Each structure stands twice: as C-alpha cells, then as structure tokens.
Length: 219
Ligand SMILES: NC(=O)c1ccc[n+]([C@@H]2O[C@H](COP(=O)([O-])OP(=O)(O)OC[C@H]3O[C@@H](n4cnc5c(N)ncnc54)[C@H](OP(=O)(O)O)[C@@H]3O)[C@@H](O)[C@H]2O)c1
Image 1 (cartoon, rainbow, N blue to C red):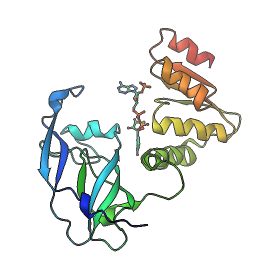
Image 2: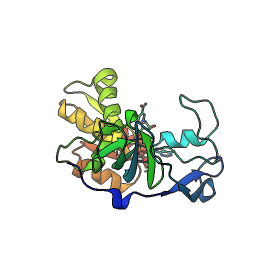
Image 3: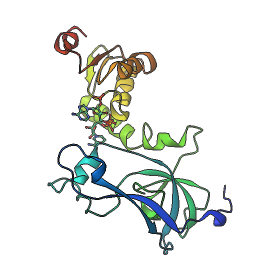
C-alpha cells in the first residue's frame, strides 16, 4: 500500500552525535543533540522517518577508538543504530512511500539511506518494533547461537546470562520449546519476575543478590 507522504517530507533531522569518546560509562557529555539538513535522496536512496530506534550493546564498542570488528564512530558523527522507519521518499524501485523498512538509520529522527541496505518489515500482523528484536538481529543471534552452537537438547538445563534482553529472552524461550530447562540471570527483581512469569523460564536469579552462587547451584 502506498500513500501521499509529500506533505510531511522533512528537510531537517534532529540527531544525536558522539561529542567525545567516553572513558568507562558514557555520560550526558558523551552526546550532543543537533539539527542537520537532509540531502535530497539520490538514485537508489530512500528518505525515511524513524518510528523505532534499537539501542544495542555493540554501540558502546563503536564509541571507543579501540580495535574491533567494526570501525569506531568518528567523533561528531551520528551514533549508528538499526531503525524501523517509514519511507517518505523513494528513489529505489523496491520501495514506495508509506512502506515500513528496517534500515541502518542511526540515532536521529530521519535519514537518507541506501535502498540496497534496507529491507521491508514483514506484514505479519505483529508490532513493527519486533523487526528490531525477536524477529530482527537479536532474535537471529539467539536462534543461530542456540541452533548452531549451543545445540541444547531435551532434558538439559540451560543457563542464560543477560536473560531479560532481546537475545537472552529469545534463547530461553527457544530452549523451553526444545524441552530443556531454562535458568535466567538478570539484574533486579522486576526482570527476574518477568523471566519466570511472562516468558516461562523455569527459574531466574538476580546477579546482584548476595547468595547468587548458592542460588545458581540450586537452580
Ligand atoms: N555476536 C553477535 O552477533 C551479537 C548480536 C547481538 C547481541 N550480542 C551480544 O549478546 C548480549 C546480549 O545482547 P542484548 O541485545 O540482548 O543485550 P541487552 O540485554 O539489551 O543489554 C545487555 C544486558 O547485559 C546485562 N549486564 C550484565 N552485566 C552488565 C554490565 N557490567 N554492564 C552493563 N550491562 C550488563 C544488563 O542486564 P541485567 O541488568 O539484567 O544484568 C544489560 O541489560 C550482549 O553481550 C551483546 O553484545 C552479540
């Protein structure tokens, strides 16, 4: 389905850039908010407005200059992120205005992105944000990690760290579906309750609790 989006094509984006490289935990001084002009999309490009921005652990690595599998974000550049975005203007034959896509749109309100790097959000009746979570990169990481490497079997017990995040939550649920016991580790009572009551983990342990070792052994 397409719609006339010409009346709401933005000419500017509000973006969050890396103001300085953090030492340890990032602070407000790590970031700066600014307005920037958006170029008109060239052949093969899309102008998109972001609906959802995914905040993922890999971003902390990009803020540092250290050696990594990906190049660091230059100081002054917009922080990278996958986004679920609405196509507002398309110069790529596979996409039309009004369509929702997953793009590498960054920490900002709108962007011009290459159509070749975008993919349509599946029309599956689920919330579009799931394309950044369980049906996106984290869910795929969980599936590939468990199916290809972990290979959990029925009757085994699987312990999942960072279990309340999108990767761990998916790993635990896949393990349960495979007939295994899932034990999750998370920070705080609310996350632990979420693991057991909402996601169906067999047990959850707060890594901040004093008797963490004993509770893990018991579970
Ligand atoms: N190789 C890949 O392709 C790939 C892809 C995606 C993700 N990953 C990795 O998989 C892991 C989970 O990803 P996710 O997206 O699901 O993460 P996430 O849960 O959204 O965030 C990371 C979680 O780690 C926990 N944590 C434990 N110790 C921490 C500490 N010292 N500082 C900060 N957080 C701490 C926190 O949860 P609690 O408060 O509950 O402890 C935090 O929420 C991450 O290590 C990520 O880098 C790898």
